[in-house]
Length: 207
Image 1 (spheres, one colour):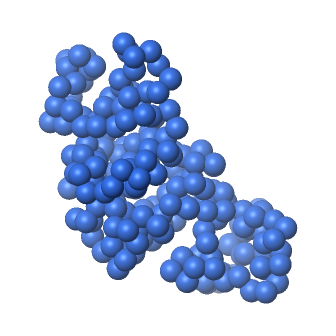
Image 2 (cartoon, helix red, strand yellow):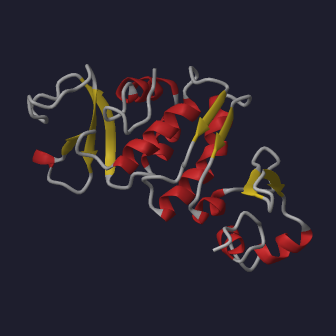
Image 3 (cartoon, rainbow, N blue to C red):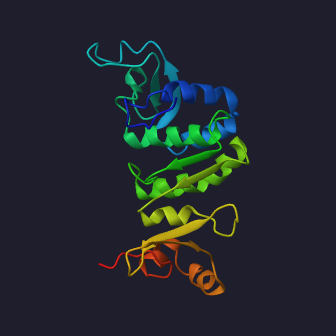
C-alpha cells in the first residue's frame, strides 16, 4: 500500500519508486527527476544507518537522494532530510506511472507542498504520465493555487477542468470550463491563472 508522502515519510514510497525504476525507461525516469532540480539520483536502500540517527523510526527501505550540488563525500540524504515537495513529486509519479495503481485516482489539494512554478510543470506531466502508465487510468484532483491552471491543456479532451462553487442558495454547483472562442482569444494574451483571477473562469470567491 502506498500512502501519502506526509505519512511516516511516505509509507511504501521507497518500495514503490524502486519498482517504478524497474518498469519505466530512462527517459521517463529523467522526466520525473527533472522536476526535483537538486537531485541527480534517487534510490531505495536498506542501509541507511550511517545517514539516520538510531532513534529515528524507519521502514525497511528508505529513499536515498543524491544532491548534485553537494560535495561527493556528503551528498546523500534520506527522505527524512528531503523537502516535502520532492517526496510529493515522486509520490504522484508512482501513482500515475505504476502498472499496479488503481484505475481511478484522487488527490486532494495537488498543489500543497509545491512552489507555483513546480506545480505548473508537474501538471503538464500528468496527462503524459497517465497515458504511459495506462490509457484507461483517470486522475481527479483538486487545487487552489491558480498556477495549476497554467499546466492544463484544455484543447486536449482528456484533460478537463471543473469549477466547483456554491450558488446563492448554498448548493454546490459543478461546471465544466471549456475554452470558448472568446476565452481562446483571451488566453492568447493571458495565462489561465490570470483569467481565473480576472473572473473569466468562474469559481472565484466573493471576497
